[in-house]
Length: 187
Image (cartoon, rainbow, N blue to C red):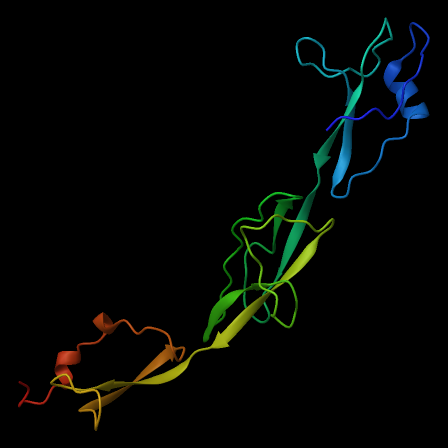
């Protein structure tokens, strides 16, 4: 995506980088910093500071993507580390996993109201640091109804209170010896 931003005659023996910095304005790119003026020589090397003009040359600029921090606001929970470093215009990647006693973590969000969820596979396009907010859902005691003989209606043979679950979550029945709750007339 190269384009000519300036053409000039420079006296033989001039320090080219100093001359360029004093005489040529380079456009800024959001999320990037000017890396360096350089000249691809036949060996792929950058034009070095202090190098003197000795003839015709093309000089280019390169940009480096900035790194920014995403800070974690755990909203009453705990998170370690307190932030992660991301590169502008690169995938956000995995974020820290917070904890909060009695709550289930439901994701990181860009806003404190937790309505705009972070897509960790998306590119980071904010030209600066950001804060993301943890969303929590309170765990509670749910009732596990045990039926026998394939019945799913009527009165269960037993109801067990199961603490620390979210309504709608799958309950791992291997944690319970459901057989202890069958009536002797089980068929």
